[in-house]
Length: 312
Image 1 (cartoon, rainbow, N blue to C red):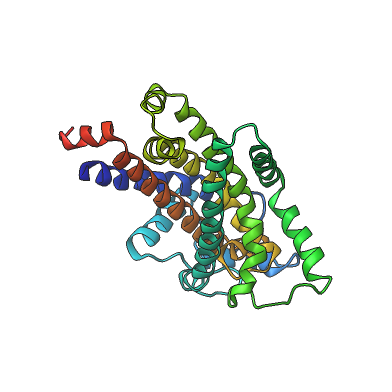
Image 2 (cartoon, one colour):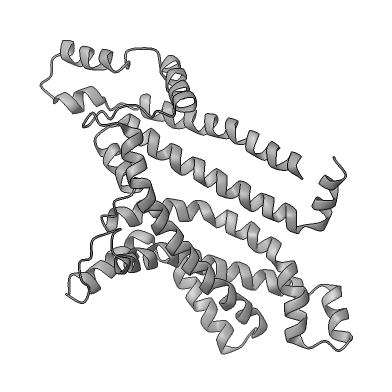
């Protein structure tokens, strides 16, 4: 089992290198010039060349990438911001806890609600409870994050029914961005949980348990929910990418002081080090969460667990 864990974490290195290479090339090969943006349209070619030279941007792109990788992986340094000359690592570390708190609040609330609703919808299949659950799931999946956030701001904030708490500092300030961010995950996980439970209920061992006289609640508790947990975990890891993307939108809508908003500000200012640093953090933690989910699935699957116990 430990071999699998070590192998998965070692496999994280090429994933980070590959994704950062793609992002690095897209940024540096784009037609926009950060020097012209920083110095203004009237800047002379000499001033632009000196600005780029002082930041190493006149070097070949592959050399810039190798230097950046060495800085990040050896020193843990994301460089200096083009926009205000602040340390990118310090700025990200100052804002990252706000992003983590918002993500955890929204994700926890979505999962706490989605799992029992999905199970209840499967148990009450083709009833009004099932139809109502699927309607909620459909709404959650269909509504775009930016639209839902703007609607909530319009009808609750601008009309004076919501107090302007400091984003990220007061717990009530988590409610609107938490709803905006968690709605999509809530709808997706309700559908995933319901379909997983219904698929398990079709299996022969479930019919055998029912034939032995076990009540429906006992069958659900002892067999169905446990065996449906693996596909539920798979669905969770599938929806996680869209959830992380939604964090960036939610932070910008509600002026949340996290790295999603910081990255958007960096894109607007052509601040390559800031954009790369924020994207690195998003990619890193997305990969870490997926590794944790894969390890949990491996541990819960008896066949895979037996395979690694045999030392293969």
